[in-house]
Image 1 (cartoon, rainbow, N blue to C red):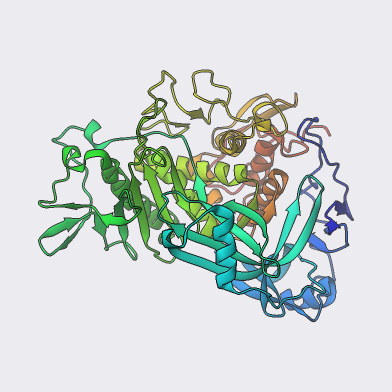
Image 2: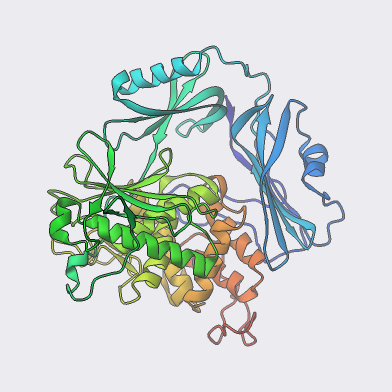
Length: 565
């Protein structure tokens, strides 16, 4: 085991607990004349930001691995992603392998500007001496997994098993252990069975488990029967052997909406005349909302962001409608099954079925993040970023909706909404969300409440504002507007290597500020920093501008002097 305490070489950041004043120091990103290097306790590089005047910048990733990182001969870094943007940025990401075995947590991401290396972020796992030959087979690993989770052989529908090296952390002791493991997931007859297990490939012991289902437990709902019968929504369906099927093969590799039977099997939803009514659908009525929304999400993502389905390459969109009492009070994206499930919320006394545009957009956001990044870490971060995608998609699909709230359409317990991203402390909302890092609701164990810090940051970035946060720091923000904010958010989450690896909330702020610099808009970069300052995730405010941002200009000409340090 080894410690993973953070050391900073060319700048010092003071660590804080969640209860102390948010006075930690992200580096001063406005400076470009100093090369910044960040290392972990064993001296391995975690982050580099090269000064423009640095004469010792590696020419490419291979030179960095050989001369700067000085990787071991037993390790390899293999490129798994690269892309270019229209503003001169080029990105590459590399996955670590040891003796041909994937090291799940080892990676490095490189940012280049006009062919010159600008930034490196990553993690080099120390696997020296590990026995990379498994002592048990895949089938034995499956049996161990089934035993730990009480799964009978005849209940398994499909198994997913991968051999890899995994760095497993123990946060309570600030330590980690590296092990050869089988990553196992069993799809079973039990709806919602949801753990990925990491089985020691030598002993068969369960070392770690994580949720396989990305869960979002509360949201809004828009039923098709809320609309006049004279104004039905149009959807694309499939026709086969005299039957209409709630499937659409005109978008990518298909948008398919099915229902889950009591035995756990998925079946098509059909109709005899292609006029789909709620009375015909019975308890599966939200299938129509889901199918229509998924088509609109697909169209929105391709037309606005040139992103073809959630993997960017036209992958199938499979949605399952669940009306069971046990699992139907939820909605989630399944990482291993690569599908979405939406519950009809039978017996729920807080909200109705999970099929509104904001919840579907949120789940779609999880899928976008999983396919475009290797973001791990706190579940609250994933929830907060998915919330932002939900906001963006709801605004475009149902622009008359209050997209800064979630759950306002279907709350049945007297609350005005589930959560309010514009007003985190809204007493009429079912739950209140975090507004300042380290304070108040941020200390909640609910990832949706804690993660609410990020959609609130997005709200402030879009709309501006002024006030005093939970750390008693005053802030003033000029709005950048929704169009610029959403295009930047897409840039930061889908087309770059910024959100990679096991990130903290501070790391996420750091990554978005890096992305803003790469985006090439000075005003945006400073407002991104100011918005993070407003929510306690940046150490000092930047300039305050005298006028609103002009979308047709890359800069603001009139501004006051920087706030005194």
